[in-house]
Length: 280
Image 1 (spheres, helix red, strand yellow):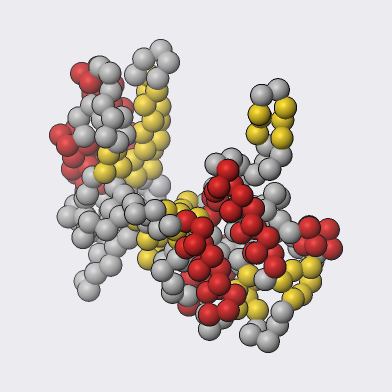
Image 2 (cartoon, rainbow, N blue to C red):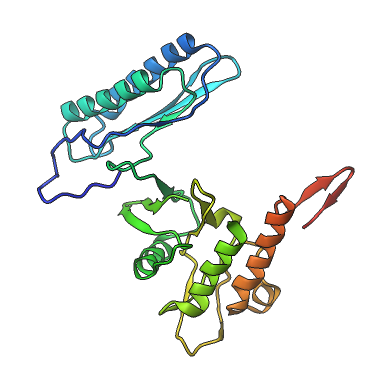
């Protein structure tokens, strides 16, 4: 959730931002599904609202012997137990009324209806505070239609969230990489260009994301060495993996692997063709 206001918003409940997105697929037995879901949401409310500075709860309920329902509820820590409960009631009512029997629902839009993507780093992620701040600072300076745009971020204790603008693929990625290397006022080597870091919007326009590993170059610099290897094996140029040398060729190599994945429809690590295991 991203909140901004010209007035003091701390300690004040505001349920005006609620907007619902949901999975279009229906449960096979909506009545049973809704019963299980309703109890799960109520239990989560009872656990989250009095949660002190946490105000967070997550749990799993059995819909059938083979299917589970996963639920998560949270509030901002600055509001009271009573207001948190009221706010969660509004959200729960939205789910039960507008997404009845749906297989999934969540708050994936801003108040004006704009779709967003939120990247939440695992608390055990190898990408730490330094890389997170690096990504925030770089994205704040860069703007291009094929680079993901940062709308906001959260850095509190071990919680690290990035709020992104939501996701013609090969050409768009190429334009984004060209911008980073040649056309931007900063020369950037991404160093982790891969399928998982290319987001697609509803019109399949690509957005390059995840600049936590990116390296900023001076405009007259062409190459360098590093004492720390970062990135993803399989996309990593051999001179970088073996000799720790990096340049814009790193991203070009990764882009080549991404093109192979795109045209073949296969991941770059390992796939099975008949009896033989092959590597792209």
